[in-house]
Each structure stands twice: as C-alpha cells, then as structure tokens.
Image (cartoon, rainbow, N blue to C red; front, side, top):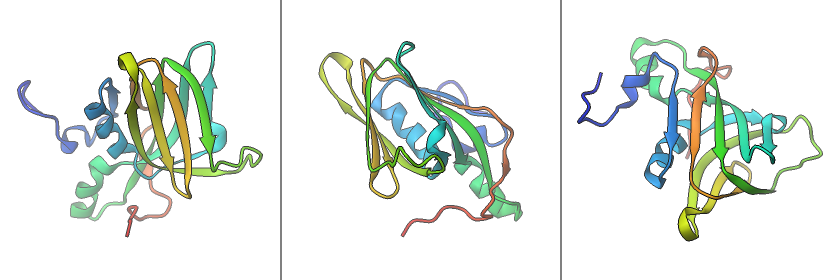
Length: 161
C-alpha cells in the first residue's frame, strides 16, 4: 500500500479492480497506458447524446499484473472494463467500417488535444489507422473494471515492434 504522500504503483492495483478518473492530461496518460492493447467489438461503443457520454466496454490486458504473471509463470490476464468519456459534444471516427457488426477494434492509446476554456478533443487511436475523436466540454475520462480477470485467450502479452 502507498502512503498518502507517495505515487501509486502498478503493483498496488494488481489484485483489485481498477477505478480511475482522469481530469487532466497527466491523469489521462495513466489510463491510456492501462488500456493499451484493449480490444472491443465496435458494437460495444455507445454514445449517449442526451447524457453527453461515450462509453466503451473493453477487454483490457492487465498490464498491472504482467510482472507477477511472468515471475510466477501464471497466465496473462484480461478484464472487462468500462471506459467512459463525459461532457461529450460530438463524436467522429475514421477508418472504422460501421457497416461491419463483427468488427473488433484494438485500442492503442488515448490522447487529449486541449482547446479553449478547458474544452478539447479526446482522441482514441486504434490499430489499423482508425481513430475516434471526441469533442468534450472538459476532460473527464474514467476507467472501471467490471468483471473478474480472466485468462488472456491468446496466452501471450501484447508485443509491439
């Protein structure tokens, strides 16, 4: 456990579900690192215009438990998590075939492009040159694990050249 004057470490959340909130670009970098290589069916991305929320149900690789799995020789894990972006004004995408209901997306990173008065654009970068741009009134992104971890179907950790 960390003391109040210490930064959290990946190991601190290794056995518990994550519940994180990003309200600044530095916070968003943490969530981006945790959802790197998350996969989701395109059908699990929902924009609630009235509620001004974009929510994605992702299957994220549990980066926070990777070292423990390697040290113990136990399987790598994934967990279903809800990635939610609040105060959404508009959503646009490129490189996503909306007509393909079986399309599986792979999330590479989340970034923030600041605008005026705290507004800006949250950019979800996807594998295969896809992207989702989310115009927001202010930065508020949350990540909540909603299931118990399960063995990663591939049995491997994601690897990038």
